[in-house]
Structure formats: C-alpha cells, structure tokens
Length: 298
Image 1: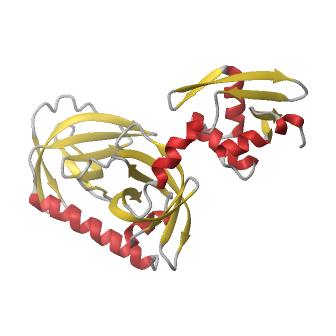
Image 2: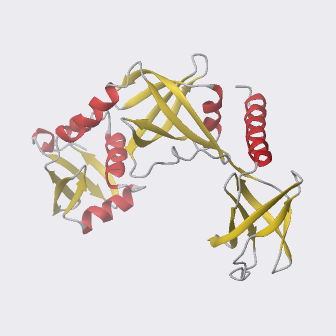
Image 3: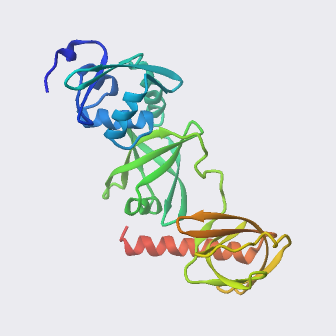
C-alpha cells in the first residue's frame, strides 16, 4: 500500500477492518523496524496489548497514552480507512533503553526462569547486543525454559525486565532475547526459597477431618487443593500434619484460601524451619533439573 505519508515527518499508521495495513517510513525508522509486523509488535508492547484488534479499539477510544512518563497524543482521521497520527513520538523515547542494553556487552546479567514450575536462577554472560536484542551464552539449566514458555526475567541496572527467547544456537549455546520490557515488580529475584509442585500426595487436615491433595510446598508454606470449599477459619491455632513423602511432622497455621479456576487452594504457613524439608526440596529440584537436561539431551 503506497501513500504520500512516507514523506511526512510524523508517525502515521492506518487501520482497515481492525487490521494494521500501513505504517509510514518515519515510524519504521523511529522503531528501527524492518517491516510493518515489527512496528505492530512494538506498538503492542508500548500499550501492553496482545493483538491488533485490541490496539485498533484502544486507539479509537483514547486521544493519548503514556509511555516512559511521556504523553503521546493521537489524532484520528476517518476516511475509507482509519488513520492515526502520533505526536511527541520520536527517537529520544527509545534512546535510553538502547543505551542501557548496549552497556551490557561483555557483562554478566542475572537471569530467572520457571521450567514446569521450577525456579531457575543463574548469572549468564552477554555476548553481543544487536538493536534491541541481547545475545547471551546460557548454561544448560537455563536452556530448559526453551522447551517450556520461553519467557525469561533479567536484571538490567538492578531493575527487572521480561524477555522472550526467540532463537537459540545449540552449537554455541547462545540464546537471543527480544521483546525486552521493564517490569514494576521484582519478578521473583528476591525469593530464595524453592517451591515444588507435588503430585498424588494427600495429607490429613484436622477440624474438617479430610485428606487434601498437596498442590505445592516450600520452606515457608504448604498449599493444598480441592474441588470443594471448606471453612478453615476455625483453625486459629497451629496444627500438626504428617508429610508422607518425607516422614516429617510439621506444625502449620492456616493463612487463606485462593480460588484457582474451578478449584480452591488452601495455604498454610510453616511455623518453624525444617532442615529435612529444605534438603528434600533442594535435592528434588536438582534431580528434576538433571533428569530434564538428560531427557532433552541438552
């Protein structure tokens, strides 16, 4: 689709039938984008949306939006298509992020991922930076996440960012991270304890006199799950439970319940530190990681 808008020094996009059909040359240069799809991807990241239909509706309803504390104004023109003009959107908005990423070359970054619920933390070496992509030489355990959701958390200047693993050189062990986006929360970097999901184990709960399935367990808490709702508010004192897979007695206090889809999670706080539990969690996690690395032939 050809337009004279390519010669206008403003950021312009055109939608038709809820689809992005055009973005001008000026906008591509600002985003350092090769094509229209890459522009769409970056616009979605800016306003935290998932598809172009949502983006179109968002731009129709809003005359402005904020990005990096900068207010970007929108002008909408209706023709046989929907034309949007952005004001105050230029290269300066993206220079800071590019500079921060470039400074990472030959340094080590903290990486965090979750493979099948297992928390995997490591420090990995940055090999190169290409535009807004980071190339990282990763250890075997961080490669596991490439077989799961491919989402990573990384720390840049002590701030958490999300990133997506988009390609992996198996021979050189180099992972390319893209879609790097700053997060407001710590993403789990400050959480040291191991948390494991446990299958097919039940523990007897006093008061309700029922055996509930264990959902997961950590050094600080244990969580049960059930398709039925029970009133555990009467458990206002510590109760003793026996963990069958460790032959360990633990004293716990009921904290709260959480609805998880069509089931109920019951969360209990562990009253005291158990060395036996800590060792079990650590050994089980390491064994699961080793088994996964072996089975996936990493």
